[in-house]
Amino acid sequence: MSSRPVGTFCLVLHSHLPWLPRHGAWPVGEEWLYQAWAGSYLPVLDMLRRLGAEGHRDVLTLGVTPVLAAQLDDPYSLRGMHDWLGGWLLRAHGAAGRRGNAPLAALAADEHRAATAALADFETRWRHGGSAVLRPLVDDGVIELLGGPATHPFQPLLEPAVRDFALRAGLADTARRLGSRPAGIWAPECGYAPGMEYGYAEAGVRRFLVDGPALRGDTAFGRPVGDTDVVCFGRDLPVTYRVWSPKAGYPGHRDYRDFHTYDHPSGLKPSRVTGRGVAPADKKPYDPELAAAAVRQHAADFVSVVRERLTELAARHGRPALVVAAYDTELFGHWWHEGPAWLAEVLRGLPEAGVRVSTLRGALDEGLVAGPVELPASSWGSGKDWRNWDGERVADLVELGREVQRRLLAKTGTEPVGLGRDRARDGLARQALLALASDWAFMVTKESAADYARSRAWQHADRVTEISDLLAAGRVTEATAVVDRYDRQDTLFRQLDARSLADSTARTEYSILTGR
Image (tube, rainbow, N blue to C red; front, side):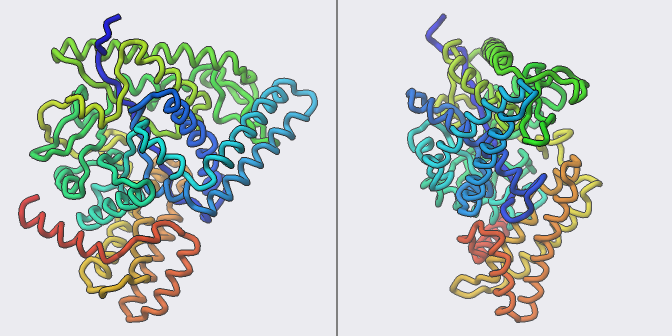
């Protein structure tokens, strides 16, 4: 095999959950956080640590949204996660002792070992929070870290000043936690509206993700957007969908652990997928050896698919090209139990097959950039448009978001707030950003815990109304007391300074005047 790579592969993982601590427990709420933490964040970051120890660098590009990073560092969440891991160990211990179900007992023994290892990892490496785990991977060049707006709002639906404020708050939060300001972001939901590149350039963002159709499938190179030096990278859907698509992908293979089938007394998942349409009672017991064989088969298949795709792109363009595959981190481990093992196989197998593995930053350094492009309004949601966040089913939430922004801008965007910090207005901004999270509309559209999503959106919006009304009435002391009460529940982004929204307003007004 030639020593010259056939091309470059960039894996991008997007890690995100909305703010969940102290907002319910089961079936969504804190349980959602702890399951994803145990199933995905622990094993994926441990896999990256091991690859780094082997000398691998520029392994992948990892997006961690500021709102998730806040949860992974939050003392309350860290205590809750430790308790959850202990509960997992106890559940496995109890299931192992149940008589008359040998497959469950064998699975429980494996789960007991996994829970023990997870507890040891958590108590040693995670005791000071997620930032302490992420920072060595960033500093050593094992990963490139992507940031994003503070609470993961759907940016095309934001007023320009609010969009700028949320983005800068998120970038500053990542810099505070990890020591450096990210030059790339995962645009929430890959949402884009024409002109957003100017705001990115002004905020110091140099690269971001869009979905493949936004580039009409021409994803072989990064592309500067418009007349800026901000580069967009598009997901290569033929390759990406090999793993996971709306209809198919490796995780649905018959030998992988079935996500949806539970042993209810223990909460363990004892079955394999077995087949489409097979009832839970008829599913076969999970067999780790069969699953491991499927991992090897699918890793080899993916490596072959990537190599063939890069060979075809190089022939078409006359030079080595790029494949970007991007997924939610929570797919690997939480939704797809075998996902972290598959990732490790792929990341080791690609270089052996003559494929250069790199980050988005590394792809730019290699010059994998083509000519500028004008992007359409787009997302990675249904239809690749905005319907998940701006459709008829969520019209009330869209209007709610407009009202939240109106109140936020009225009390912080233009009104003088003095020379010092103003706790009431800071709290108003915090609740507004929580109300504007993209998760609420997505969950409603997809009928995934829709009642919870609506209640969260309205809860934070009602708080915005309460605080802004008190400020409008000049009752600043009462507004501050209300904020202090809500801050005991929502303990994130305490450094958020509402005065910077006035700066965002001035910047966006200048951009309008100058045509940018």
